Image (tube, rainbow, N blue to C red; front, side):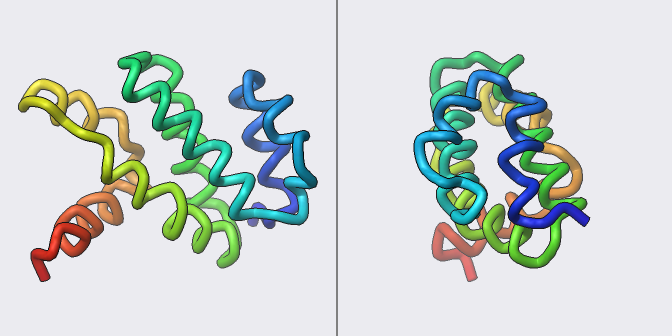
Length: 121
């Protein structure tokens, strides 16, 4: 299991561009800020339609959720998924593209959040 202290290194290994951002605060002790950093970067890449980099980000989030301990999973659920669900999808092509990027480990959570987060309970 990946614990919250290992998360910054896992992110840096896959997304070297975040190394500096992750070292601006003691990320090792702040799992929510660490996931927030990944979230902001992923959001930016998706909005700029840089799907290759966004795919890497989403894969990291999926891997962290799949292999993470309870604290890591909670951070992905509370920080990453809500932002991911708020990204505007202009048309069916954008929606299909986005759905194809989301890893299997967090896809059901994404769909569930879409249904409940939009008031469709």
